[in-house]
Image (cartoon, rainbow, N blue to C red; front, side, top):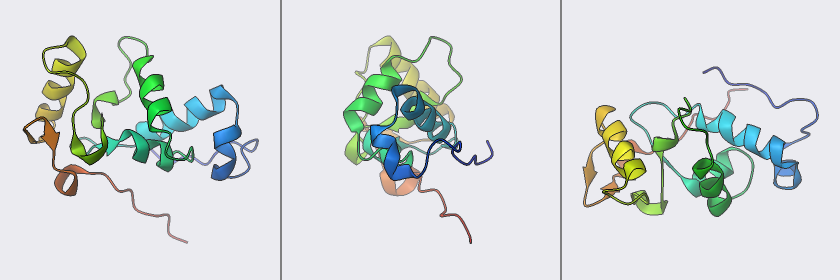
Length: 126
């Protein structure tokens, strides 16, 4: 997905923590959509990249409310330190593990190596 600049009513990323819930969700979804296959981010990293601060709990809660069949790559978001937070044996946990493995992400002891699979987007040139 191509990078998109925030709409004019969002002044700067640091304004997002106090923005409307809809604007916060949009920023989160736009950032999540950019995480490439085979890469993962933590809940806190995703919030920070979206300009929301390290809002890990809010990110997790928001992602848990995604509609069934969403095309957003929710499975690429994991807990800090590479830990898989969705329980193994649960439908969502099993789906997350299967999707990650299908993308070439190696899972060992319920963890993903963040040095190998962590996503750090390139800063904008300019």
